[in-house]
Image 1 (cartoon, one colour):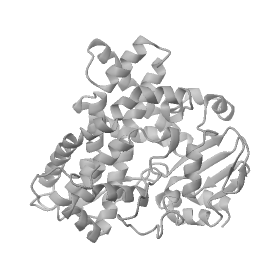
Image 2 (cartoon, rainbow, N blue to C red):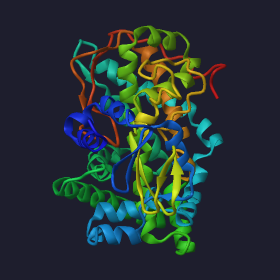
Image 3 (cartoon, rainbow, N blue to C red):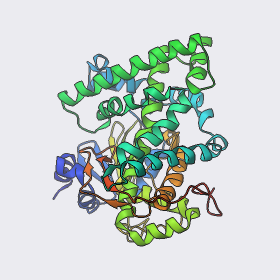
Length: 421
């Protein structure tokens, strides 16, 4: 199978559900392969890491978007994403990222550990009550979504009663992040973007009337004080992206990771007994089945990567999920091994666009997995989980499990101990 055929397979429903065999077909052509004129696919860890950190490679900007997609401004989803830090290059990206970075400092994140543990305990209590008679419960709906959405909504100042709204809206909007999208999917993404932007427009107006101690208020005050630092469109777009990115990736990490742990009972038992191992486990879970599988970059100047010349204007499809299984970096990459030496997966990217909330996502997972295993010691699959047929954001729609009637006691917050940063 040549590289172009492998890319076509990767974009198919079968390839999206399980991309890993196709990654290996692409890797057979080398860590960087030209799949079409000016279109390069990257499966190598070192090569993907280098491109992510290279200033010559950026994301799609408005000028190029105008050439490739003249009507993009008529799409609410494309227009919204393009105004966020997710799809801007320096200096705009640097300016936008700096405005939100204060909410995600290591000290602020570390201070949230007990709050995250308390929220996780409450969700586990509710799962145990619902599943006490043996009825299956859905980990995605009952835990993997409400935990991270509760955390990011608290940071943004979103009222608790509004949090159930966001799962569908975000699922609709994130279709725009797929490498290929149909007109029907674009219409769905536009609907999600419109609903999310409308919600945050109302929240912005509420924070102008009654400021609060939250990130929304802080960004509103920046905009009102100096529109050149943060325009109105940028304010709404970044609130939308902070919300969606703040829980989508973590939701997928929790679902993907729990499936892996249930498939590896010996490793799960070790984590249950030693919650201080959680940081190492989370890094390996991120590597083994990354919640974000790909990103793209475009070169502004010619460059050489893995012995290949990438002309200016080239596109690079960076397959992060494949890079995380590069055998040159990770011996026996298809084996789940929490004790790999310094894995440093590329699941959150690298360089200027490194995920702003990566530390928060790691904290939530480090807390959640030991608590689930300890408090629900008989946790077991209850039928086949349903995968999303998406490639960029890899995760589950449903994950049915059964839980024990007797749950473990609440106790020392998960993730504490000598292995915890």
